[in-house]
Length: 111
Image 1 (cartoon, one colour):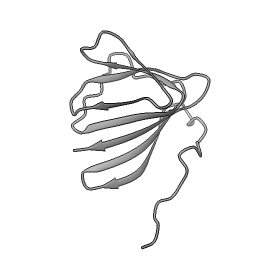
Image 2 (cartoon, one colour; image 1 turned 30 degrees about the horizontal axis):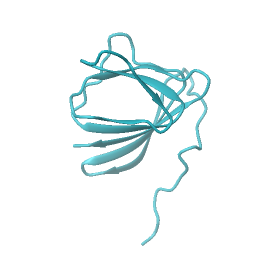
Image 3 (cartoon, one colour; image 1 turned 120 degrees about the vertical axis):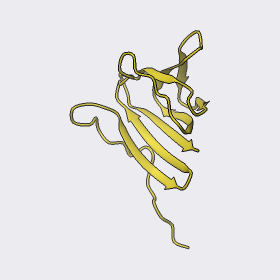
């Protein structure tokens, strides 16, 4: 069997023209998707909450982020190595990501 879809999680693109996070699908199979997300100081827009139909497990590989989960008292402070599972329809938002270095996330989505 031949190896497919190889790469390096830390071969990072520069900031996107016009700003914004960069999403790269690393693997997509029926019922599961793995993405690398690179943030350059982004946060969720004011008043925006993610409310996804699929489950998500996310790991911060590099940088820092603040994640607010609806119903929790405060912002979860995430640094390299920290991970969190977000069940389907768990409303959440990104309050901040690192300004001084890229924040690199590995996200696994499943139904």
